[in-house]
Picture 1 (cartoon, rainbow, N blue to C red):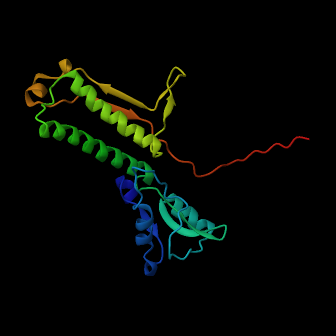
Picture 2 (cartoon, rainbow, N blue to C red):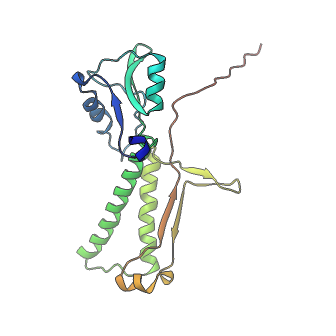
Length: 208
C-alpha cells in the first residue's frame, strides 16, 4: 500500500520490536548534519541492535518490498535499507528537502537583510541575479557535502557544471506578477550525486 501510494518520506524497517531498532536507525541516520555531508542509510551499524538471521528468500522479499532490515555482513551487523516506499532512495529525498529548505532560508535572509537595512529589493534583473547567486552558492555547498555532482556531460558531449539555472528577465513577467510584486521566473536543474552500493562484476586480468 505504501509503495502504491508513492510515499517519498515513508521508510519501513523490519526488526524485533523489543530493541527499538527504529529509534537506533533514526538516531544514527537522522542526526547527520546535511550541511556537512549527505548520508546513505545502506550498511550503517546500529548501536545496541542485534543482527538478525534471514534466509535468502526472506531478504529477497524484503528487498523487493523496499523494507529495511538489520543483519550480518562479514560477521558485523549492517543495515540493509535506505529506500522510501515510493522507491526513491532516502538520501536523495533528504537532499531534495535539505536543498529546498536551505535555499528558502537563504532567500528569506536576503530579503530580511534588505528590510533591516532599509534597502528595497527592487524588481529588477540585478536582484534576480543576486537571488540566483544564492542558489549557486547553496549548490556548491551541496557539491562539497556529496549531495550533487559537480559536473555532467551535456547532449553535445561537453562537460558542464552540474547545475543549470534559468533566471527569466523581469520584463518577461506577467503584469499580474509585477503588480503583486511576485517574481516567478527562476528555475534550477541539478544533478544528484547518487551513491554506489555494489561493484559487480569485478573483472581482474593477471598478465605474466
